[in-house]
Length: 344
Image 1 (cartoon, rainbow, N blue to C red):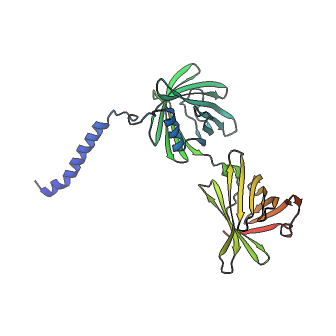
Image 2: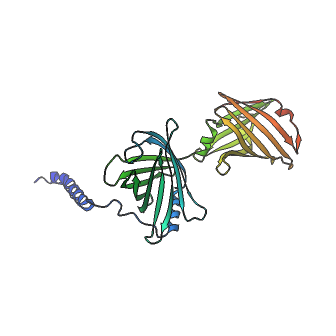
Image 3: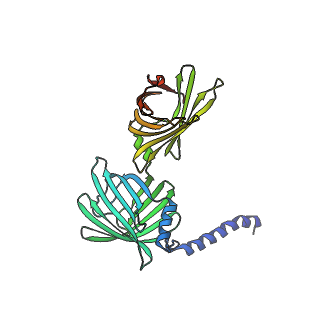
């Protein structure tokens, strides 16, 4: 026997043994066997909190025949909100499926509580597919850090069938949900959820980012606005351009969406101590109107409304309703529109 030839074959032979052993040891293994159950309701909700599962989520896609009352082949836009109610004893999810023509295809609400006897989370969900009612009740099979598996029994139009649902944590702002019939019938329904970006949604196409330069006499004011926190805020730095091209920062700000008040807000502070709080009044792709209130370095209150309109790489701002210490006053620098040019 040629030892060199045998030496080349040996690794392949070992590999075959390993594969054979692995196949035998995994054959018939329950994929959910390694999932764990929470020891308590507090442990379960901590898993949801720590994993970032609460919030508002959305998805688009096409329905399958996994359900009895919702037809297959419908294009939809899904939106859901998952929260924990005030007492901390119940998780609530509400959701809608809307067709491409705006028709409400499906809607429902779900409550999740702790079954003290069986020591596991259980839930009940019901709703309407069009005008056809359905209901579903289920229980947690188990979870790990990357996925959560549930089983449920759905009743619709006199038929009851079991569903298996797996929810995977793809990343912090993405989830994948797979719903399938336990009996293997129908086509599994797969959704990729993304966490709703309320700021982008509220800005309605308005993009304030870029480096904008406003000339006031011999002075150039440079405003640089960039997306931050995964496009969930806008970070602003403003300053005066030096002769060497650098910028001496004179102010900083941030724009974000206030989920409680359902409004876009801005905070701005300068190196002189001027502090402003802004609130968007109206916004569209090319126009934003914002109301500001604050105090200057001497503690004098001031208010103003600023209308910004964008035309390509030019942004023109107009000031109105300005008051200082309660008195209506328009300073000379604010009497005329100010136009900023986008450098980059």
